[in-house]
Image 1 (cartoon, rainbow, N blue to C red):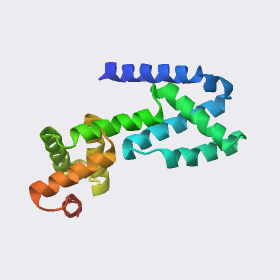
Image 2 (cartoon, rainbow, N blue to C red; image 1 turned 90 degrees about the vertical axis):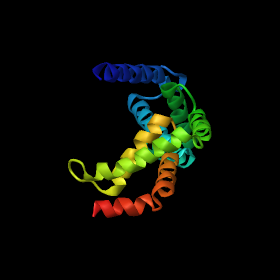
Image 3 (cartoon, rainbow, N blue to C red; image 1 turned 60 degrees about the horizontal axis):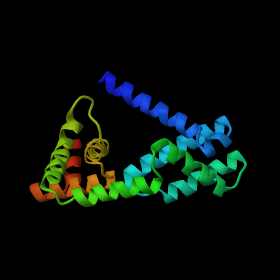
Amino acid sequence: MTDEIDSATKKYEDAVIKARESFTGRTLTDSQYKEALAIAGIINREIHKSGSFIEKLTDYAHAYARSAKFDAARGETAIRDVYSASFGETMNQTREALMEREKAAVNLPETKAQALNSAESVEGLIKQGQTQPFYRAYDAAATELSNGLGITMVCAKALMKDAFAATHGRELYEHGKQVEE
C-alpha cells in the first residue's frame, strides 16, 4: 500500500513539474500557476463524475481570469494547457476515453454483476461503523464502481440503479432510504 501511495505521489509530482515547465506554465506567476493546476484538478474530477466539463471550465476560467487580471479566453487557455500537461491528454480526450469505455462496458454481463454488487453494498455502507446517510453510501459505492470500470459516476449510478431494480423489483433509492431510517 505504501508503495502505491509513493508511486502515485511521484507520478503527481512529475505531472506538476511537467505542467509548470509547459509553455503556458512558464508564463504564469507562481500563484496563477497553482490556481490553474487546482482548477485543472477540479475539471478532471468533473469529467470523471459527469462526463462533461464545458460549463465548469467556462465558470472557472472567468473567475480565474478576473483575479489574474487577464481575459477569460487566456484564462481558459491556461487551464487547458496546464490540464494537458498535468494529465497527459486534453480534457476532451479524457472525456472521450470515458465514453468509449462506457460504450464497451455497459451491456457486458460482468459489468451488470459488478453494478449489482455495488448497489447491494450500499446497505452495508449505511449500517457499518458510524452510520451514514444513503446519499454518501451511494456516492461511495458509485465512486468505487466508476474507478474500477473506468467510467463516469453518472454511468455507474445508472448501472447500479438498473441492476438493483431488475434484480430486486424495487428502486435502490427507496431501499436505501428505508435502511437509512
